[in-house]
Length: 364
Image (cartoon, rainbow, N blue to C red; front, top):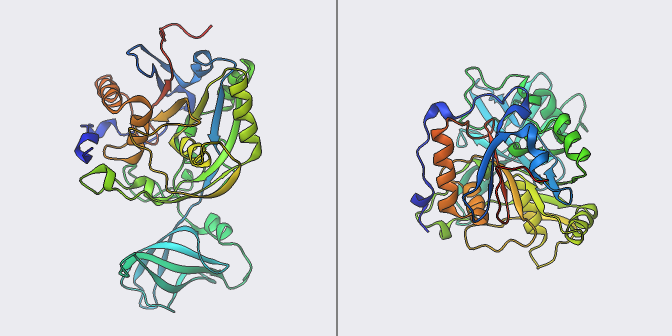
């Protein structure tokens, strides 16, 4: 498969710059896998298109305000995007721009009493310097203060590049760019399918008897990056941290036993579930996954998917295509564009369900 097979034309005005208000007023496209039957509604009405036997799986990662601005002794400004803990206690991997300017051992100033120590520049597989550095964020007055706490106090939310803010992300974005499930700190991007959910939607799901459960996948920087290789199969998938607790395994088993469908809320939830079932059986545990899900992949856990409209040429679009069929996904996208739907992180959503049937009538 060629990367050009993942392209589609999207007018710039179709890229949502703010979420729907309220969140559950976003449009929802409901369609079955392997059939052309579909209907359109709003996220608020999600429960009526699900069966009480179904299980929804959410990602509870929380986005860190991971973008930090610092200055060298010369006054030159340096941008750092903190990615994840790496190496010795207190050390993190960070994208640095410009990466060539700082020197190993140099100390940058973030705010009064808060500094970044530049430890070493990271190398790629060929031993060449990358844009990543090993760094340590330090509060002189409170040396034991956690990096996550410092980022919460001083950092800026790392919004995707297609969300335009004239003066950078405002403090309001600290909560706007979080799901209602956000609890486990560590992501640099939101699991955007979850942004649509509100207490009202959750109440309607539970009133219908639909079970829900949460796992964790810390969305990494690679989620923003398009596939760079001409042949999709040559792409090297980025690695992300995940955790699947025993209660998730138990909930999936119970769903199977009652004849329900496991519906991942977001590609990140889908990826974590499939990574935890890589040996053929869903197992509790934590680790890293570089699982690359593309058409031809055989899903072991996920039956259906609630997700956003994704970027052309992205691994997220490939994952949706693996479940639903890439030509069918692109046709759905074209229809949504013609209908002036809103795309990407703050945009509208779709629900892809297995089987067939007339989805113009809600499930009884």
